[in-house]
Image: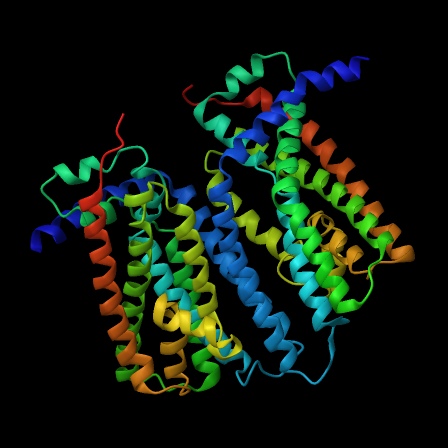
Length: 272
Length: 263
């Protein structure tokens, strides 16, 4: 009963974000066109790459699989993206966090619901259409669709959303201490790009680096779901990958709590 | 003209002061942009671990074009970053009025108002990549060649600025044009790789309509001996002159049309 009323109390934060994002829809779609340019670049690049070798597969990927990988990892990265760290640093910067801390609501829960609104928006505006299209491409290229892989992909993506939320949240909490988050987020963005598999499948890295990357949280957000979708993670390695995702959710949630407890005491608020 | 130089120096002085004040910000931003460029290099390296060459281009040749394309991009980034804000909120919030009432060229004011040192990250990486690949490829960097290279880089920077100016001027008509600018700017990614890998339609678009091909591929290919002096240098010059004129024309038309959305 208590759970339910709590849910009701926080739900407006989610719908608020959802409605705000929806009202910018036209601009978002043009921004997305910009991202499609990037996709087109990688599409032609990969085609040229496969033309330049006599092998039909590179690191176990055929050209068709690689194109699906590029599309799917791109869609997954759009699906899981949330603006939480930006929201937090903005609240710290303009001082509005002071008021939000006085209110009798949990900051973490509030952010979680804001992220939920964000994710729902991603789902409605981008994911439904994108996922359907990719499945059609997959069917055309491969000749069949695996319902099991699709379902596992969705589960794994949901775990990825949670990892990304906690990561974004803890990263955002850093703004309690650091005033310039912009430069830091640029650095983080490039690291995430490289290690999440958004740029290139992790299998392309040297073996020892691969081992390292699989144990970092980044590859659990995009690489794992995409590989599951492609049916490249099965049996033991599938269970292992999903377990790593769950472990990272727990670790990051604990780190978030610890960081909150130490940083909230030392928070310096500018202006307001 | 002299007055403008003097004024720009004054503007710059203020920036350097604030730069010293926020030194950590500057360094973080710089590292950020260097890292972003590095991820692109790592991508190329990981790909070349599996293939001997890409459509006839070897690793260092590709690195050369990639690096070359970063230099004008960075130069433009350092000096004309305010155009992003122009396409974003300046007109929406009615802040453009102030440029019109001062006795100075409005475009000069918009550009001089902001100086973005993050762009040095791109310049540094670009120079580094070009130097490394030059030494690996035995490109003869004679005095003349260096002069031509600097010249084409300047032309290419103007092409970047012209494209940004033309697209951000759309804001005079539709108020918020940042998404359009972003979309156009993303096209520059195509210029980092050989044009031969794209279908005819895309390479035509990048050569004649939104001429990003001249910011990296064409001049770069000239130094690698893969295209003629005419394409690599003469056309780059010609295209940069034309695009600046076209962009300035659009800008002027936009100002004529501008009506304050003030509050």
